[in-house]
Image (cartoon, rainbow, N blue to C red):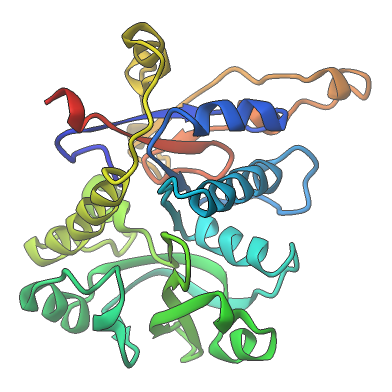
Length: 300
């Protein structure tokens, strides 16, 4: 989880399967959005992609009004950002990059990007030399797809990688205009996932690399001045109200998971189908819940 161990930042979570006003309200109070990775469908009604669409659209409108609202997308969250920028067209291709640790293959001009301009020579060397990124994905985007569909007008490609079969895929992007960032890999796994045989690097270099992304995004959130109406409202929203379960001991692929009772909306009650809003949020940030980064630096 990108913000868990960063000083002066806290986070709250919000469910999917809600009306737009729900997201407009919370977006007026928080300082940034993290769209998590995981496994779900983009074409699922009232699901992850619908919630993400609201957040993406609201964030664009806020930035256009001069309110700095950053978004970070990890793995599926990154794929969702590109999907939304392509007018909800799924342009992903198959990839074979599960349990694959890789260095970043930087693209020309990466050091002029917002994301990597602050990086020290040590951090750049770590990313470009060591197998420090944790890849767990079966879909990806290619530079050819970006070129063919005009996505280069929206996104700058900062790095690529190659999967187990040698196929090239885009691994890091940032939006041309807005403070939106996406990575195909999972920085949070290096810091929080200690499951055997998953090929996740936990060296000091890997920790420095993952912490760089965490620090960067929280610094982006610090540029936003939103607040909750009062201390009580803020406290009620924080994730500290929930307790994670230690599921790694039970053979899960995730060390800890937050388990929530399923919410069944009015529309799904008529069909007897449970809403996906009762999904699981893990330290890997499974896809069915969107996590909001709450910057608490003003109270330090």
